[in-house]
Image (tube, rainbow, N blue to C red):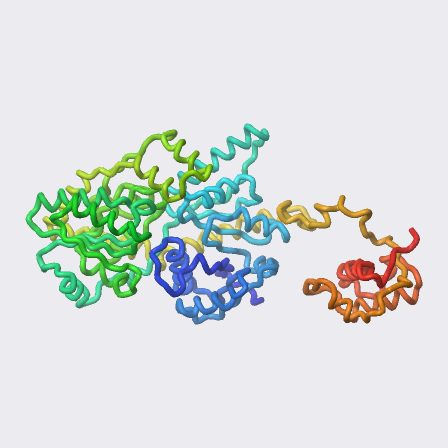
Length: 555
């Protein structure tokens, strides 16, 4: 493998389900993972792009995706068992918080071999929460990192780790709980992609029937009241705003319905709560809609009340498109939208700890689905509808306010959230991880690393299974009743060996030496091989016993 330059070229753990391919679906994990990869390609200054995948067709998929994203540098994909090649790079990047699994795998070659960097996306589902709590007992190191995409996510991760540490302290008397680094680095965007182009606004507004003096609010994202945002606060606020100012209000929903009944629920709520507002629905998965619809709007609104949200890319994208934002004061939104500068943040209230215990019990015991659990948590969350209505009314009534906030948000999106700014933050983190890892490695004890018990050698875990264990002093002799089949045929009869094991010629050399000696110890027979082959040779001797070409001798 090529020598790693001063600029770290990490290996990217690639699972195709973490990346969009083909259909454009507005799902945060896949969109953010692909966007990060594209940002790294464009702004990372990499000489070579490395992937690491265990999928059967992962190499081809990774190479194809990176070329589609504009990679012109060489692309190399590391096979899953070649952890030594990952160690040469010194850094493995994953699109999830699953540091537990990857740190256990790393134990095969030592914890100092390379640093792991994970990232949070949705943190409030049982899989992600299991990954987070597992960090407490995982072999993670101080040079590993779990990137939190917002301050709210950092607070949640710290809350969960603290609770698990307290539980283990009470149960086991544990006092030492190593944690990975927990830096806050936002998700990024390609700001240029959202820059309005001449003609888009007029074309879309004509197509939708929005007059020049009308005001259009825009919602972009999944249209799901249980896993994204319940539409009631948005519809109610729009209705109040429409009744308190003279301009005609429109609402553009650019997304996709999570399930067929969802559409009717949204439409019926809109008809009841904001009949004065003209409703337009578009498929937000279509590329022209996804790129151009921002230009048709005057205001972007996203009143999320759902705990599955962690960062929220859509408000940042709206800011990049020059739209003022009306969003809830909720999780990562308060890190992106500056109240009174880029838009308005609407206050929210949530029930205190303990009120969700019954819902969590029913979810844990399989009585309700994940979506129902999210919906019950949202049911105990209130959005300040009056504040949202006043924010929309003020923006609808004042074109200069919309322009001023839109320009401020657009400048902020470019300065803070463009990948050209965010990727260097990742690179600075990787450099710090390298520094910590190398400093710790200098004083690390020597010796062969012991794999995590999850990956224990079966011959260690099940050492009590057999009558005895094979050792260097084991005596062998040719079996006088050996099968008459030739060696090649016997090899074909048995399970295939791993790469690097002795082939037919090496096995034949051991068998010839055994026949020449008549009886010998394993250690004596191995002398016909080079020392580097003694490990495969020991396993080959057991195979000779297995197929009946050799028998145990007198001890």
